[in-house]
Length: 192
Image 1 (cartoon, helix red, strand yellow):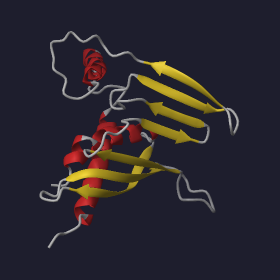
Image 2 (cartoon, helix red, strand yellow):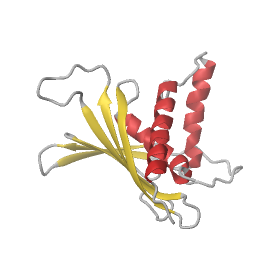
Image 3 (cartoon, helix red, strand yellow):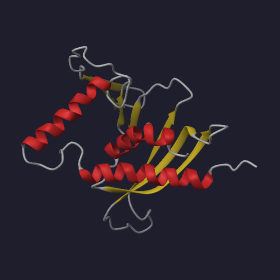
Image 4 (cartoon, one colour):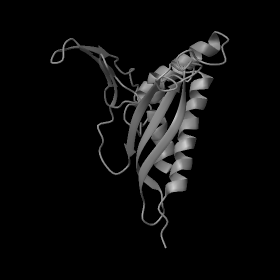
């Protein structure tokens, strides 16, 4: 039963992790997680995951870690009203994808000027016009039209994948979920 919330919601977070660590440049070398499970069915209801990424094809530097690495911390749940934001934190500032992060309508760039001063720039992406012909179950679903338009553009140009999100990205995102699901399956508490 492991994988219900992971496969339903986790994919959006794996995709965000791959924005910071693209599959063409990085490998996900380690995926661990902890979960809260349903009492009667063992379904994963909340998951906190940690992913470690390492740069591909990088020559190790003496005295340093083998390759340039980074960490992505992910959390998803069906038990609480989460902020649904994705935040990338770096040594020069941060980038926040506002609610709902899987179909954001705003991205905020915060650049560190000094240790106490930041400059904030907001980029707004209004949702497409909704003709009212569809009943959207998930918030922000209307914005998935942008993805559909990118695929349509690629197909019309004779491409087999979109430039914005390619086959390697898809395989990497699903590989991350597969690794997390395997980890959770192996470490799920057993009830007697």
